[in-house]
Image (cartoon, rainbow, N blue to C red):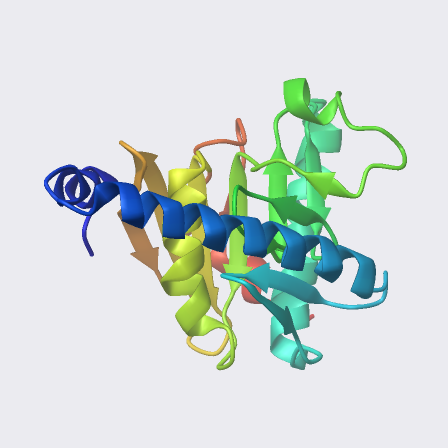
Length: 209
């Protein structure tokens, strides 16, 4: 996949740069109008995202997906409360608004300085420090491609991709606006970069009881 710098350099050399910018602005204006319509359409009970100009509604998750989400969110929340580190763990129903797309990550974390600015009635949130996406057959391509790139370009510092069926976790760290794989684990302990002091044995994350 080409980097932003490579794409921009190609555009700079294009004789029709002005026309391309005009067309791009028209696309962005249309995208903005469609995203506003999306916000007006969705209900609080919906699991929905706005991705590259389209509203995407998600079906209910499988039991194993829900189990992993419940386990990990509990471990993260318990860690923050026990160690009084501050910050906020959010689960599924938080709408992250990036420059073009809007996502509802499975789990995310905002550091204290950001979380303390949130209001009680806030519905749209900035890019978090840490995101977890739990794969399902219908979302894996998006999680590994569009979200992978979008989260990195918007400064998400740490990204975990969890496969609940294979019981693996991939941990990525942001470097120069791109994610680099640190580890891929199917056993042992994983240690967060952005949540001070948090680590967990994978057996706790995938445990069924």
